[in-house]
Image 1 (cartoon, rainbow, N blue to C red):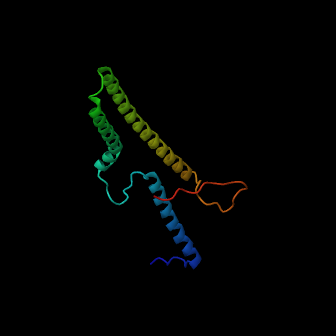
Image 2: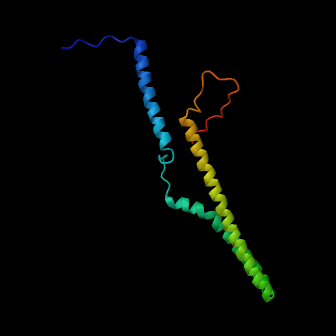
Image 3: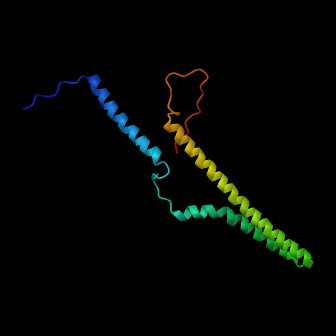
Length: 148
């Protein structure tokens, strides 16, 4: 039979276990960072919910516009023909501008969110959010973003 392994003192054992644990935690953390948007967070949300939430501002603005059109039409019977034509063109232009602005702001907000996520991932990968034991003079890092 082979001889037993040499006895390990308590300090070495604790260090070995700690290193094993820290390695596992680091690997899990890296995996979580890479799969930040793809990892399931508990409850699976149906896709139609996202479509509905995207359409809600458009539905609200269109319904408001249609109610306003209906109210104006009640008084529109008193319009002259040239006024009706200008009113119809003005209504269509207003609806178009409304929809274009909603879409523009949605695109801007989505771009800002994606840029912020990219920046945070890049900084985290570079170790920007790790606490330093020795701080350099005049060095101020922003705090890490709160966990989701």
